[in-house]
Image (cartoon, rainbow, N blue to C red):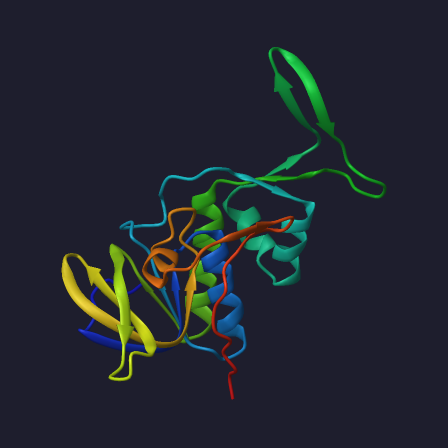
Length: 200
Protein backbone atom coordinates (compact mmCIF):
# COMPACT_ATOMS: atom_id res chain seq x y z
CA UNK A 1 0.00 0.00 0.00
CA UNK A 2 1.39 3.36 -1.02
CA UNK A 3 2.54 5.64 1.75
CA UNK A 4 4.49 8.37 -0.06
CA UNK A 5 3.09 10.36 -2.96
CA UNK A 6 4.19 12.91 -5.52
CA UNK A 7 2.84 16.46 -5.42
CA UNK A 8 0.47 15.80 -8.35
CA UNK A 9 -1.35 12.55 -9.07
CA UNK A 10 -3.97 11.47 -11.58
CA UNK A 11 -6.65 8.75 -11.52
CA UNK A 12 -10.08 8.01 -12.95
CA UNK A 13 -11.92 8.01 -9.62
CA UNK A 14 -10.78 9.44 -6.30
CA UNK A 15 -12.57 7.92 -3.30
CA UNK A 16 -12.32 9.75 0.01
CA UNK A 17 -12.73 7.35 2.91
CA UNK A 18 -11.45 3.76 3.13
CA UNK A 19 -14.35 2.34 5.10
CA UNK A 20 -16.39 -0.66 3.89
CA UNK A 21 -18.27 1.40 1.29
CA UNK A 22 -15.24 3.17 -0.15
CA UNK A 23 -13.06 0.05 -0.13
CA UNK A 24 -15.68 -2.10 -1.87
CA UNK A 25 -16.44 0.58 -4.47
CA UNK A 26 -12.74 0.89 -5.28
CA UNK A 27 -12.46 -2.88 -5.64
CA UNK A 28 -15.48 -3.11 -7.97
CA UNK A 29 -14.28 -0.25 -10.16
CA UNK A 30 -10.85 -1.88 -10.43
CA UNK A 31 -12.53 -5.04 -11.71
CA UNK A 32 -13.89 -2.96 -14.61
CA UNK A 33 -10.46 -1.54 -15.43
CA UNK A 34 -11.15 1.85 -13.85
CA UNK A 35 -8.24 3.27 -11.87
CA UNK A 36 -8.95 4.49 -8.36
CA UNK A 37 -7.16 6.35 -5.62
CA UNK A 38 -8.50 5.52 -2.16
CA UNK A 39 -7.52 8.01 0.51
CA UNK A 40 -7.83 7.50 4.26
CA UNK A 41 -7.15 10.01 7.01
CA UNK A 42 -6.04 7.33 9.48
CA UNK A 43 -2.54 5.77 9.22
CA UNK A 44 -3.95 2.22 8.84
CA UNK A 45 -7.14 0.21 8.45
CA UNK A 46 -7.41 -0.55 12.17
CA UNK A 47 -9.54 2.49 12.94
CA UNK A 48 -12.60 3.31 15.00
CA UNK A 49 -15.87 1.90 13.73
CA UNK A 50 -19.61 1.97 14.40
CA UNK A 51 -20.54 -1.65 13.79
CA UNK A 52 -19.24 -5.11 13.04
CA UNK A 53 -22.43 -6.80 11.84
CA UNK A 54 -23.40 -7.56 8.26
CA UNK A 55 -26.91 -8.80 7.44
CA UNK A 56 -27.57 -11.53 4.90
CA UNK A 57 -27.79 -8.96 2.09
CA UNK A 58 -24.31 -7.67 2.90
CA UNK A 59 -23.03 -11.23 3.13
CA UNK A 60 -24.57 -11.97 -0.29
CA UNK A 61 -22.71 -9.02 -1.84
CA UNK A 62 -19.40 -10.31 -0.51
CA UNK A 63 -20.17 -13.77 -1.89
CA UNK A 64 -21.17 -12.35 -5.26
CA UNK A 65 -17.82 -10.64 -5.68
CA UNK A 66 -15.64 -13.47 -4.35
CA UNK A 67 -14.68 -11.79 -1.07
CA UNK A 68 -16.56 -13.78 1.56
CA UNK A 69 -14.10 -16.68 1.73
CA UNK A 70 -11.23 -14.23 2.30
CA UNK A 71 -13.08 -12.71 5.23
CA UNK A 72 -13.88 -16.14 6.65
CA UNK A 73 -10.17 -16.92 6.67
CA UNK A 74 -9.58 -13.91 8.92
CA UNK A 75 -12.48 -14.75 11.22
CA UNK A 76 -16.26 -14.32 10.96
CA UNK A 77 -19.07 -15.50 13.23
CA UNK A 78 -22.47 -16.61 11.89
CA UNK A 79 -25.34 -14.95 13.74
CA UNK A 80 -28.19 -17.33 14.55
CA UNK A 81 -30.37 -14.57 15.96
CA UNK A 82 -30.29 -10.85 16.79
CA UNK A 83 -32.15 -9.39 19.75
CA UNK A 84 -32.80 -5.73 20.51
CA UNK A 85 -33.11 -4.85 24.20
CA UNK A 86 -34.47 -1.80 25.98
CA UNK A 87 -34.76 -1.34 29.74
CA UNK A 88 -33.97 -4.99 30.32
CA UNK A 89 -36.66 -6.22 27.92
CA UNK A 90 -36.42 -7.73 24.43
CA UNK A 91 -38.28 -5.38 22.09
CA UNK A 92 -37.44 -7.02 18.75
CA UNK A 93 -35.94 -10.28 17.51
CA UNK A 94 -34.52 -11.01 14.08
CA UNK A 95 -34.59 -14.69 13.14
CA UNK A 96 -33.53 -16.52 9.97
CA UNK A 97 -36.03 -16.45 7.11
CA UNK A 98 -37.22 -19.40 5.11
CA UNK A 99 -34.26 -21.35 3.77
CA UNK A 100 -31.76 -19.32 5.81
CA UNK A 101 -29.54 -20.77 8.52
CA UNK A 102 -28.50 -17.44 10.04
CA UNK A 103 -29.26 -13.70 9.93
CA UNK A 104 -25.84 -12.36 9.03
CA UNK A 105 -22.26 -12.35 10.22
CA UNK A 106 -20.18 -10.68 12.89
CA UNK A 107 -16.80 -9.66 11.48
CA UNK A 108 -14.17 -7.20 12.81
CA UNK A 109 -14.12 -4.23 10.46
CA UNK A 110 -10.33 -4.42 10.15
CA UNK A 111 -10.68 -7.99 8.81
CA UNK A 112 -13.28 -6.85 6.31
CA UNK A 113 -11.20 -3.93 5.05
CA UNK A 114 -7.95 -5.90 4.91
CA UNK A 115 -9.61 -8.63 2.84
CA UNK A 116 -11.05 -6.18 0.31
CA UNK A 117 -8.04 -3.88 -0.03
CA UNK A 118 -5.41 -6.63 -0.02
CA UNK A 119 -7.27 -8.69 -2.61
CA UNK A 120 -7.66 -5.65 -4.87
CA UNK A 121 -3.97 -4.79 -4.77
CA UNK A 122 -2.82 -8.37 -5.27
CA UNK A 123 -4.87 -8.89 -8.42
CA UNK A 124 -4.60 -5.59 -10.29
CA UNK A 125 -2.61 -2.38 -10.48
CA UNK A 126 -5.61 -0.04 -10.84
CA UNK A 127 -5.84 0.86 -7.15
CA UNK A 128 -3.66 3.09 -5.01
CA UNK A 129 -4.30 3.53 -1.28
CA UNK A 130 -2.99 6.60 0.51
CA UNK A 131 -3.03 6.56 4.32
CA UNK A 132 -2.62 9.49 6.72
CA UNK A 133 -4.12 11.63 3.98
CA UNK A 134 -6.83 14.27 4.35
CA UNK A 135 -8.79 16.26 1.79
CA UNK A 136 -8.14 19.99 2.15
CA UNK A 137 -10.27 21.31 -0.71
CA UNK A 138 -11.36 21.00 -4.32
CA UNK A 139 -8.91 21.24 -7.20
CA UNK A 140 -10.20 23.54 -9.98
CA UNK A 141 -8.96 24.42 -13.44
CA UNK A 142 -8.67 27.94 -14.90
CA UNK A 143 -12.39 27.96 -15.70
CA UNK A 144 -13.36 27.05 -12.17
CA UNK A 145 -14.36 23.49 -13.04
CA UNK A 146 -13.65 20.85 -10.41
CA UNK A 147 -10.96 18.50 -11.72
CA UNK A 148 -9.90 16.76 -8.51
CA UNK A 149 -9.05 17.42 -4.89
CA UNK A 150 -6.26 18.94 -2.84
CA UNK A 151 -4.84 16.76 -0.08
CA UNK A 152 -2.28 16.71 2.68
CA UNK A 153 -0.40 13.49 3.43
CA UNK A 154 1.86 13.34 6.46
CA UNK A 155 1.59 17.12 6.48
CA UNK A 156 2.79 17.49 2.87
CA UNK A 157 0.41 19.26 0.40
CA UNK A 158 -0.43 17.53 -2.89
CA UNK A 159 -3.26 17.22 -5.39
CA UNK A 160 -5.13 14.44 -7.17
CA UNK A 161 -6.68 14.95 -10.59
CA UNK A 162 -9.77 12.77 -11.09
CA UNK A 163 -12.78 12.54 -13.39
CA UNK A 164 -14.99 11.57 -10.45
CA UNK A 165 -14.75 12.32 -6.73
CA UNK A 166 -16.63 10.06 -4.32
CA UNK A 167 -17.32 11.03 -0.74
CA UNK A 168 -17.32 7.83 1.34
CA UNK A 169 -16.07 9.62 4.43
CA UNK A 170 -19.05 9.43 6.75
CA UNK A 171 -21.50 11.82 8.33
CA UNK A 172 -18.94 14.65 8.58
CA UNK A 173 -17.87 14.22 4.95
CA UNK A 174 -15.08 16.53 3.81
CA UNK A 175 -16.20 16.02 0.21
CA UNK A 176 -19.70 17.24 1.03
CA UNK A 177 -18.35 20.15 3.05
CA UNK A 178 -15.95 21.44 0.40
CA UNK A 179 -18.49 20.85 -2.40
CA UNK A 180 -21.21 22.80 -0.63
CA UNK A 181 -23.67 19.95 -1.17
CA UNK A 182 -26.80 19.79 0.95
CA UNK A 183 -27.83 16.24 1.82
CA UNK A 184 -31.39 15.02 1.31
CA UNK A 185 -32.69 12.26 3.53
CA UNK A 186 -35.01 9.62 2.11
CA UNK A 187 -36.09 6.08 2.81
CA UNK A 188 -32.81 4.74 1.38
CA UNK A 189 -30.60 7.07 3.42
CA UNK A 190 -28.72 10.25 2.59
CA UNK A 191 -28.43 11.38 -1.03
CA UNK A 192 -26.12 14.06 -2.45
CA UNK A 193 -26.06 15.18 -6.07
CA UNK A 194 -22.89 14.75 -8.13
CA UNK A 195 -21.45 14.41 -11.63
CA UNK A 196 -21.71 11.24 -13.70
CA UNK A 197 -18.58 9.62 -15.13
CA UNK A 198 -18.60 7.51 -18.26
CA UNK A 199 -15.59 5.30 -18.72
CA UNK A 200 -14.68 4.76 -22.41
